[in-house]
Each structure stands twice: as structure tokens, then as C-alpha cells.
Image (cartoon, rainbow, N blue to C red; front, side, top):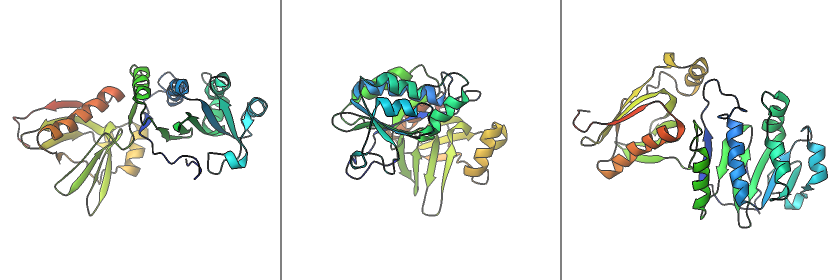
Length: 285
């Protein structure tokens, strides 16, 4: 998703993320769409305007045409937008919420929500606050610069929602050791050096042990064969067994290393991962 050149080039600070939990559908309480709707409800409390890109095939397209202002070409904020509408908050909030809601098991409503709502942005008087491409779950971006209370409120809202969280946009932790750069993201550990790079899904992680005296993390991973059918298919494509996950990762000594282990703990707590996190400074790497 891109904003037009003349609108706002501010980079996101955070992203809304949701794990694909087994047996959970988008319209369930823990589902991706329901979670995003909860977050948007919070964000609209802080916004003044919503811009919406809508496909004419959406079941409520005529209602939106009648109730909302269609944005002229010169005022559009979405690149390549076909039909862009502007809603004022709080006046038009009920209509926006009706466009985003999916009744349980309503496949037509699900199609409208994920594909006919092409893009969405919540704006304040000063900048953009949230932007989303519903069918691209990785594009749920938040611009909370100078508005820490927004993140606090989102964290409160998602605290009891297993598998979802708001995380820093650039990743949770990053460090370089032994010529390799490591980036701990919300769903993977990314490793890169001058010759190659690989990403390892945190769904495969069984245990993390911090050996601070040696400056090492010991990592225990599930083999591909232990994952779900969908997980095995994904891992074969993006995280092949031929690229064996690292069993030993160097980290800085002292507080910097402890912060990395804390980042693993934070992800486990906020997103409900099942891996264990331990400290064993007296063990050998």
C-alpha cells in the first residue's frame, strides 16, 4: 500500500499482527478480521477521518456512494485508487463499522471484507494513524509517533486476545555477532551474512536457553515433520529443512544479551507461542 506523493511520507512505528491459530477462522473472536476490527475501533477513537477504497462489487457500495463523499482524483491519498471515499468521525463511524463486520460464517461478507474493501486508512488532523490492505494481512501499519497512549490502549484491548499483538514495525530485537546479523521479528528469526540469509518460523521453536556467561543462545527447534499440514507446506517453501535452523546463536554479553532473551519472552507472552525460555548461565554452550 502506498500513499500518494503529496500526502504523508511518515513511516509506520508499529504493526498489528495475528498468528494463524489452528481451527480459528477470520470471524472468530481470535480471528484475523475480528482482531483488526477491534483495533480499528480503538484507533477511530483517536482519528478524525477514514479514507476507504471500495470495489463497486461490495454489497454496500451504493449505500457508501449515497452516504459518503467520493474523493476527487486531486484529493486521493491512495495510489491507484479507483473509488475512494472519505468518512468523518465520529459521524460516519456506524457505517464504517458495518462495512468491516462479518457475520459468523457469512462467506459473501468475508469476501466483501477482505477483497472489496481494497484499502483503508484512519487519519488524524496531523498525520495518518492506521493503514490497511485487508487481503494483505502483513499491511496493518500504525503511525503512533508522539501518541504513546494509542499503543497503550491497543495493548490493553489485545491483552486477552491470544495470538495477536502490536509490535514495533522494525522488529523486536536486532544484533550482529560473528559476522552474522540477527533480526528477531514477531514471527521469525532472520539470519544473514555476506553469503546467505534465511528466516526461521517461531512456530517451530521449542526452547530458548540464555547462556549469558558464554554470550550464547541455545535454540531447540521442531522438525518440519512435527508441524501441521499447512505449516509443513509453508516451511517447505520458505524455511526448508535443507536450511537447518541454528542450534546456537551468539549474543552480546551483559544487559544487551539479556534484552534479547527478554524479547523472546515478550513475544511468547503477547502472542501465545509455546516455546520455553530459560536462563542457564552455568551450562556450557
